[in-house]
Length: 422
Ligand code: NIG
Ligand code: FE
Image 1 (tube, rainbow, N blue to C red):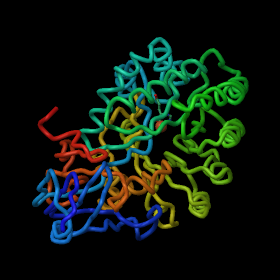
Image 2 (spheres, rainbow, N blue to C red):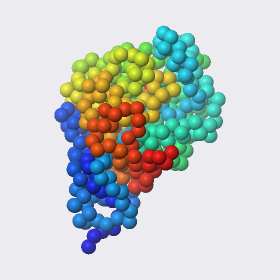
Image 3 (cartoon, helix red, strand yellow):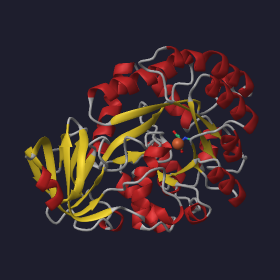
């Protein structure tokens, strides 16, 4: 007797399961778990079975079916690094950079992150939610079904709490799942200019305890922007140690502009990931691999800044460090919601193969937010988050850029986007 399920997606020309255990490293980063003529059975928002169409249809019958004949079916993307909660935008700065100003110069002159901080502080939770919602819809339409979401444009206790409330409200009211990260140490706010250590006191003594207090909005991770013009190694250590003592997972923005040693610090403190990594020496990458960390790479950021340096993904893969990708969606360095575009950049500027870029956008990105046992691959018991592409070969995702090849998005067993429905 066939068992009844909610959905069966069948006859996929290429079904990419990404199945396995643990983040993929080294040669495994190219393994997609590809099944030709594949099918997936879904019930109650979870995957029940994955196999060939003959295997799945031999055991299950569905209330609803999707034929993916000649198409690619794969897990929904996990965007491992975003800053989606902000008010306003910074197109004027973009124009100034084209005329020759650098990102760090604009930041030192009170622009950059601080100009978004001023706008974000002036906005209510409702305004922040209303401004972020269309960004999340665009992410979903480009295949992202889960995203890490950082605060960091409030920089007072009240305004950081406001951003976390916005993340919680958005997570509860639209299909894209958000995993909150507290980034109170994103910049030294202007009222603390020249008194960075005092701002760090505020983060440690007041903000971290306050954001952990309310279970409904408590962040899962704490991140620090450790770089020139932001926080130094000592300050980063203080903040991350306090966050760890509060039970938060740790992340760090490391070596985006200059090398300060934050990757080694993160490894020492048991961080789940280090992110950006444009100037990290090989020995530090190898040590991070030993500690089981994930590297989150963000090629949209150098692209967004018209820089020519990209993270050295090949060395990371060589030393066995699992690589994940994220958009870094933010109004300053990278206003981009599309993971396929990030994959297109990863292949061209970091010499990742299309298969490696896909692994980095699914299973490894899920591990970068500590959700690898539920998201990022198609296996029985995992969340039914999957995509059907308007393409017959997965390599089109990175190869054919500047257009959206995502045809259908399923989140927790519900069809939440079909192309042409926007
Ligand atoms: O990841 N590095 C720090 N934060 C962002 C930039 C934020 C902004 O400019 O608003 C980044 O690049
Ligand atoms: Fe960032």
